[in-house]
Amino acid sequence: MSNLVCEPEETVSDEAIRAFEHPRRTVHLRVKTYILIMLMVLLSPVSNILLKKGMDQVGPMVSWTPSRVVAFFVHAFSTGAIWLAICCLMGFFVSYLLVLTWADYTFVQPSAALSNGLTAVLAFFILHEYISPIRWVGILLICSGVFVVGRTPPQTTEQL
Amino acid sequence: MIITGVIFYLFILLSGTGGEMCVSRAMKIVGEVTDFRPRSIARVFIRAMKVPWIWIGVAMMALGFFSLLGLLSIANVSFVFPASALSYVVGALGGKFFLGENVTKQRWAGVLLVALGVVLVVVGRG
Image (tube, rainbow over all chains, first blue to last red; front, top):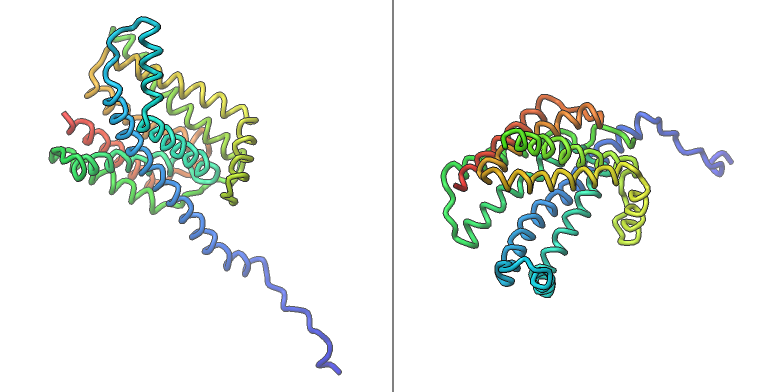
């Protein structure tokens, strides 16, 4: 008879739940933080390059008369590269705002500086631009700085 | 001219970085995003628009941006951008005192490395 009685499930203590959930939550938090920061780091230089390409197609503004200024912006906004750049910038800003809903500003701000290094590396490999040794040292410092910041917990505050 | 430049520089550092911190504060008030479907993200942004800090932040960031343009009109790019790398240090101080974040020695070291790296990347361009 006693076999037919359902025994209540063993109660799991709060400490045990925290001990189980905490590492999982930490990993989850880090993964989504890194994904959004990587998006920011990729979208920022890509938007800069697209803006540069777009504005090269538009050409310089030769006159400041209102009709010429309007024509300049109409030309700029009819360029595909400019719209692609705007889309990238919007993606960057959305990622930035989303990651700030949980991650520290002091974690996101320096990590996003990787885009400076990536811009230089893209310029080296895609545009075949010369990169001086000083810049390579700077890129290494940025990467090491981001690595050091990345070893700290992304979130040290609760919701305000 | 020097005084104007210093004023622009202070606005870049304090208003630009301060604006980012206000936006950060607004997003912390909105709360952690756990659902990344477009409709949920749209709801997050609608909630964010109702937090006054976001508008203060955007206004300050705009002021910082126009100050950057102002400083660029009177100073060389090779000076302006490396000098604005100090915003990482201002950001770390603001994060600690305005947002109450735990800026450990390790994070400080990382921030300083990044700031120095940005200076070298910009200086090395010339």
